[in-house]
Amino acid sequence: MLEIEKLVCRYGKVEALKSVSLVVRKGELVTLIGANGAGKTTTLRAISGLLPPAGGRTLFQGEDITRASPKHILSRGIAHCPEGRHVFPHMTVQENLEMGCYLRSDATGIAADMERVFESFPRLAERRRQIAGTLSGGEQQMLAIGRALMSRPKLVLFDEPSLGLAPNIVERTFQIIKGIRDQGTTVLMVEQNAYAALDMCDRAYLLESGTLTLEGTGRELIKNPHIQEAYLGG
Amino acid sequence: MRRTLPYLWVGFLLSVPLWLHDQYFLHILITTGIFTITAMSLNLLLGFTGQLSLGHVAFFGVGAYTSALASLGFDVHIFGGFRIVHQPWPAVTGFAVGILVAGLCGYAIGKLSFKVREAYFVIVTISFAEVVRLVALNWVELTQGPLALNNIPPFTIGFPGLWEQTLWGKVPNYYAVLAVGAVAHILIRRLVLSRIGRAMVALKENEPLATSLGIDVTRFLVLAAVVSAGIAGAAGGLYAHYIRIIDPDIFLFIYTVTMVIMVVTGGKGTLAGPLVGGIIFGILPVMLRPMATPEAQWIIYGVFMILIVFFLPRGIVPAVQDWWQSKMGVTQAPVDGARTGGRL
Image (cartoon, rainbow over all chains, first blue to last red; front, side, top):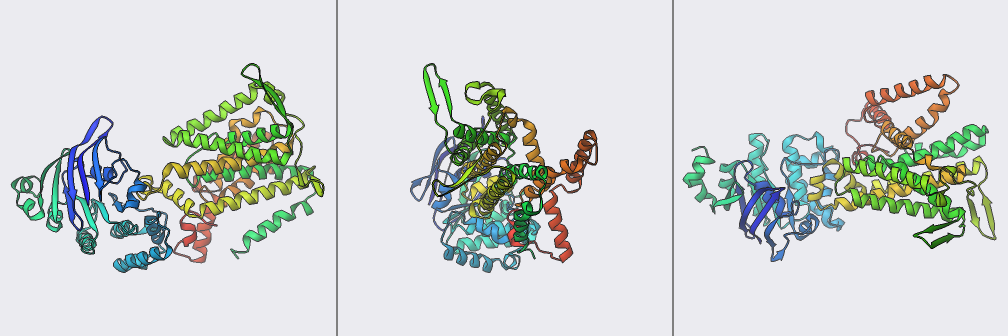
């Protein structure tokens, strides 16, 4: 579904990604793990068009989207749920969700999708008229996820969905992401919480200093001695 | 109550010339109205997209000069032998051309500077205002330079041959300003409450997120700049045909500062803010005049401004709304207001 070939990204002169190649197949839940500054977020930003890559190619369903605009990429079916549970703090829950389908204009489809989101997140339904900035951290994360789903994506990119959340909420968030995959949406997730990510995913990649160093199923990588030592605390 | 309030306001404003016969005070109301329109246009950029235009007076001045020149006619030589002669157009046509040219300037400035934004946008707008002022000052053949453009014709409305009315005097001009102000307000209101306005607010609140949701940043900011500049140009046209004399001093920085003060004290990002700020800061200096010497006036003016910024950092309108809501015991912010961070 998504193929990345030898992607290179630079911030000024600093090379954040050095020739990254990865594949996400339809229906998979793939995670990208790695330490701070390894280039995980950069990879997602390059895929969704927020950061035009310096080299390489991104193919989505056979279409070259390497230098396409974020708008075009979103309209092709890739939604990006950015790091740090970003919401529009002064808009209501419902308005935030509406922003998620800004490019769509089918009112009935939007209403149906919004009801679906509210069904999956009853907390949001209760607070649909509340200002998003006043939600708790966990609720904001639910809102960010719900908003990403509002564009009816084929592939969702999650950036550190567990960041800064209470442990029980982290667990719930991962359940929701698995649920999204189970309903047929492909997921590419970036996560620092390596154990949880490897445990739930179909396949995983390890990114170190801008280079992919390991690839395999979640089970394989959990057993890998290098990962155990460096990312799972031995 | 809240629904009828705007109509009461409009009714009140329409009735003013019926009971206010003081020509001087009517003049103050007209100029206040013109500046309130510029404050409204600035608010579209500053309040709703978060971009500070510190050269906003340039759009006002371009509108004024364009409208004046189009209705006065001119005869200039450029590039050696090339000569452009323009026969005078009706003032209303000049007014429309003024809006158009100001809007085009907004487009150019927007395209140039929104790729970099923020501090750069501020610098580009200041420079633009200064460049336009110098052109107005030095291109004597076109603008008469410091001698000013004189005898600018007043507006004539109606249908040629059937019924025509020339807007001499204060009362017709008062209504002209009120009409343009109402149109500008409705235009901004519709824009801000539409999908486009939502996108602008989204950009102001969190630009990377808005981009990731497929919102084309430059497009919406340029659109805001064009509309904002066009409305400021309309205010300039009103000014030119009412005062009937304009000189390069209309590009002075102090006018931009006045607009910013009106917007910030009234409440940026609210629709009513610039109206309240514009009326207060348009009329306050006049009210103070009989009470204090000029030096004391400026001190009172300054203290008042500091107090507002200090105690009501979001401006008068949001503060009044918060007070009203807490009094009415409303705990949740209404949906309508939430999207703009302010209501009405």
